[in-house]
View (cartoon, rainbow, N blue to C red):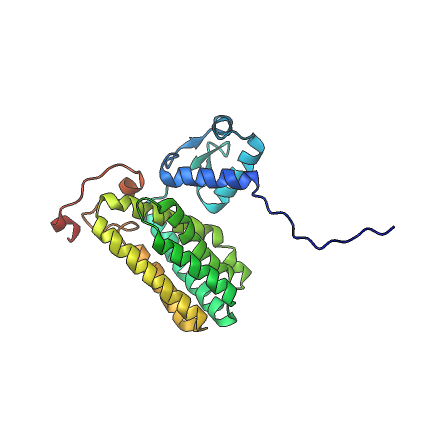
Length: 257
């Protein structure tokens, strides 16, 4: 008797490790696991209520994404603590990668379904408030830029998706902490970023590779020079902002020096 073949869709279920990754990433971005914090796997597994096997896999994924690095002779892991200059260097590299990704995605053509997915990401970001919903905004921001890289059709570009996700989310965290420094400037930065995202998606939809690359590079270049990444002379340094400490707002004369 022959086996009957039934056309069914596979059941989708979130892996335990994915939940652990999301939880740890949120703790890092939120400052509960601050930069430089050494992670004790046994204690962390007990706090999360999981065994050390999915925890080890989650830690490996976060290390690949750039949130963790090995220390103590590769015996332990600690939360990454990038300086302002290191973040600038990463964004300088991203200007090239994001520009290339946008140009390639536009020239090869992106399906309406994929464009709709990217559009929904931008729409959801617009619907969220920066201060109350910034962890979700950070994830969406990473999804948008990583999604464009994945749609480039170039595996070497797509190989940089972990770096794109890491830097996009770290900047979103710094933007949230910048609320304590200059909330008006923060609102302007967010609004400008959202408008630039829409322009970029329009260029990709029009298959205008040159314009898509120009817009993507300009968007990243502006991120490099924005206060949450590279503070102007006389403003609060990134390390202090990223630490989550409450900061006094600088005097206008200092901020504009």
